[in-house]
Image 1 (cartoon, protein in one colour):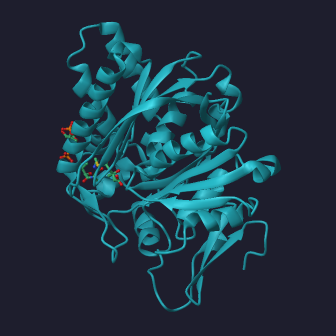
Image 2 (tube, helix red, strand yellow; image 1 turned 45 degrees about the horizontal axis):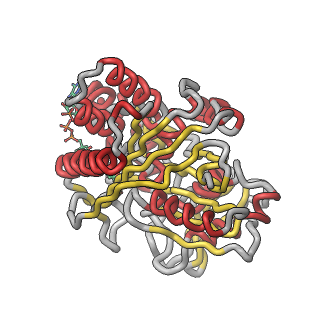
Image 3 (cartoon, protein in one colour; image 1 turned 90 degrees about the horizontal axis):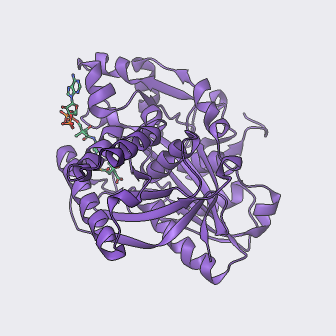
Length: 392
Ligand code: HMG
């Protein structure tokens, strides 16, 4: 049975920060951010968006009444969850009015959460071929103003529906996986900003990729020539390029090198404009590649997922003929209509995020054009709303 991604969507903030402006404000050469890091813009997430609303805004694009009835599992990958007990999947299920017989859980392993969901969904659909699974990866990447990680912030959500006989990407049943207990990036319970050993994390990323990729090639008796594209989790887009170069070093065939480098450029197009979105990042890269419109039917894509701490997985997907009907450049056109903010406005918004607190508090939700918003908290309960309802 063929199992994979049948529908795919993406959402991020209507606001962005030009990276050249951030570089100037931090007394850095703009080319360090634009070329050295490989980022042009960074999504600036409003304080009226959280993991739940970002996910709802992405998933509403692919969930209609037919899906509401057929989805019976909701898998929510995130590392910026909004509650220590209650899963974000329940909020999402309620906001999207998915039938209440569906079950849902939150999956956490840094940026790896959504990939873990994909493997679970593969097994679920194999047992229930006529059912559909909704998956989301939703996060806000926050390191702090004027920190080393600041230039790799961002945020947003990717949503997908997985099923049998998928219309976008058929996922391979074989994958290779590596887990090691390392401290490259983590976020203690009392913090809303990540702690990171930046250079070490980048080195481990490459190491995890090389090990899982080589293990895959050996176990499947394949070579790098068998791939039309290799795509990556992209905490910053230069990271993927560095990992790709690490395996291209040993490739003599120039046309293979050229093809993989070309496709990599297609795959980092949107990530360059958004920044890190943790769990969704690899899948935004997939959307980038698919919406570039340069893939042939049946193209063989290798995907590398990395979640700090750390877990890495290499798996594959085959592009399904006619995928452009399900996802194309119109699906991401909204990115062109975003508004630039100044560095001081970005800093104001960044500082205005609600801290966990006992007092009731409201966000600036009235200014937020997104369909779903986080209004604030009352009696320590989170209040969500949809745009067309009474926004006051
Ligand atoms: P940094 O130390 O300020 O940057 O921060 P750098 O000095 O290493 O410079 C970056 C690149 O810019 C270098 O190129 C420079 O040569 C180049 P590279 O050697 O890497 O090829 N450069 C220039 N290029 C052109 N023109 C110039 C110029 N100047 C310098 N004028 C760092 C970089 C990534 C460490 C920092 O931003 C950081 O700590 N970010 C957060 C951590 C991170 O993203 N790690 C990635 C791997 S871990 C991961 O992917 C998991 C994660 O997503 C979390 C999760 O799993 O949940 C983070």
